[in-house]
Image (cartoon, rainbow over all chains, first blue to last red; front, side):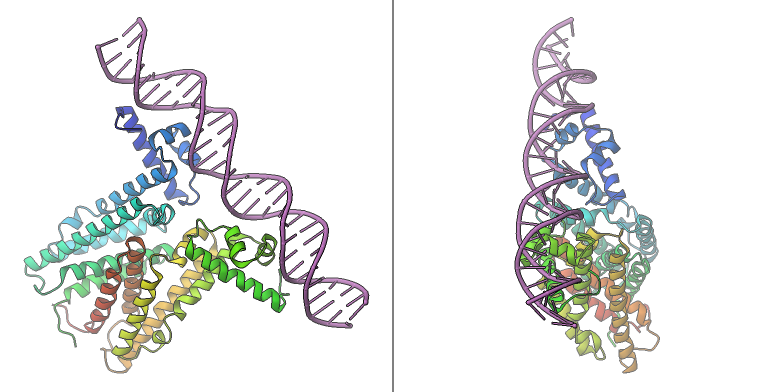
Length: 202
Length: 202
DNA sequence: CGCTAAATGGACTGGAGAGTCCAGGGTAGC
DNA sequence: GCTACCCTGGACTCTCCAGTCCATTTAGCG
């Protein structure tokens, strides 16, 4: 499989990726087999290896990229226009809803664990996702500052880091314990702390 | 294997658990095999199944419990006496050092993903760990209040939740990207936000 | 219409690794 | 020292699943 993919070929390839993503979400990465993907996407094994010559790892990597793209997209348009406190609240609601709906499974996290640190590609995907996420949040903080709603001496990058960690931590607890309250608390307090960020330490 | 374990038997069983934990740390859960454990612990397959009749899952569950116990223990004695700001800083240092040293692998997280939500036992272990962790932090916050270093109207449970999420998130980012700065930022800002917690919102 | 390359079907292989079984060695208690 | 009952060794089976191979069909293109 080099550049020459017909329209049909592209369609099949995408069908495989999306089907594989669905399979991974339903079962776990560990228990998702190529046969599951074949059944779900009505393809044969030769097709899988035709479009992903390096086999399962290559397919899972494509799925990981697919899921990573999804993460930020699901937060739009809110993530891109965090210029007012109302916008932050809306964004909060979307994130909360998304992860509560997703229930207790993180396709990306488990994919990462499976494909592993071993492969350079997987890590690159996650690193880039985190970078963009933090950058978007930092932009939001700066927008608040520009609008005069937050003191200029607040460190936007750091506050974005705190919020990102809050989400990751909340989701991580949600996944492992089923408790969604920590995610909500972490987000709410994170935003509240942001409002207070200019305050002097007592 | 029911109650009757001789001293020798107990020793072997523990050797297996610790050896398995080491194997899981070195490789990943996914690629850790019973043969690896056998080699590492100089045991035979029949021993493994003698001490863990239900097989690999039961062994991994024991390893998970072993690792979970470790987590809180590694934070002692600091976690238990968070009555002053200095104590909080010391605790911060210990946590930071522990996870930076651990590098990019979380035995518990990956174990959980492997043994999975499916088995009730694994989830129970994590839930209990999180509960104790949050409770210890909340006790620290209350200690600060009792010492008059923090206003009484601060919600100790919520602040503990924020800090727990901050750690989990920071570690999670550390594991997946190798960046330890987020963990440090999240912890530092988390403690700083705690100091500011009584402040009025601007 | 025919040629070439891509797309597909599906049987087959090879290996890894969990779990089984039984025989033999050790040890505690009488 | 005898006699149960743990404890241990290691060969064996059995299943699952990634990856291979080749035969066949379909589609672009002159």
